[in-house]
Image (tube, rainbow, N blue to C red; front, side, top):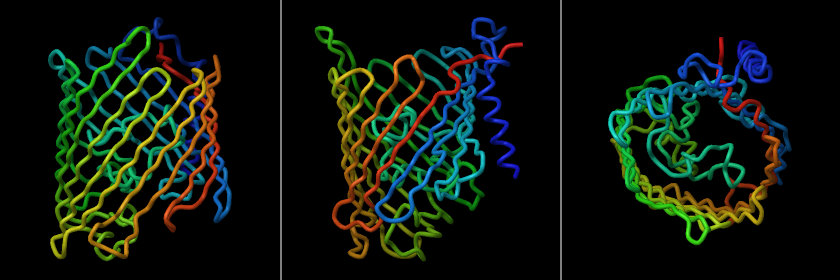
Length: 364
């Protein structure tokens, strides 16, 4: 009941925001919250099981402070009818403060996504395909930890200058919104280099990089990430958890693409090492500005040492249309499993995304 009341409050705030908010220019302070909100309604039609309508995401985000100075970000999410442990409750995803220290250098403190991965940092409201890869959700730090939403609590330093970008952070290691069980601390670092420009009026960009993480797990549930392995070992994993991510992205005119490779070395306090790895590659073509045609292939092996844990493989094709002058996005997506992967099924997914508010600053 409380979660439903909270959802109603968020909906009322988002939908009627124009009545209680003023344009940013009229605000008395740059630190007063700027509200943004959007909702994603999804219809799923799998080849096995029942079809269903769901609220895939309903988000409300509050930002304050000048981007070149001290600023903050707070984000809430609500989901329902996804047959997930996070259904029907409002969760705090992000709550952090960013403090610039010098040219190109800033520090972040609070609850946020550790700097591990490429796709994980792409806004879900602007993805070329309907969702991030299943691989990303399994292999990023805290990715499949129930209520964590890949977030954790900690401090991070970020340096960005001359095409180079470096981030390093130290985190609690439990995962956001999770009960403490003695896991952590978690150390994460990411280094990348890239360039972007325009050649004869044609825009282009590229970037490549590496990320690594390390944590000692005392009681971590990794069973949903490492499908097919012994739940006795993975549901209460205790041992060293080390991960690596290599990524690259590039774009030229109307074509863009990206790829990532993940690897995890999980050394339990008792037993042999688990070596999980996987990769994906995707490409998107924009024949016109508002239309995106995208194709992706991904695979994942939960343990190279286990013959009982077959690789999971699938294709994902997607068509996205963004309406002109209306904050509405329509997405049609088709998942096609390969290699007899029981964890995947042929599935059609259709999504409507509507931006309720964008950049409204709370006035007096």
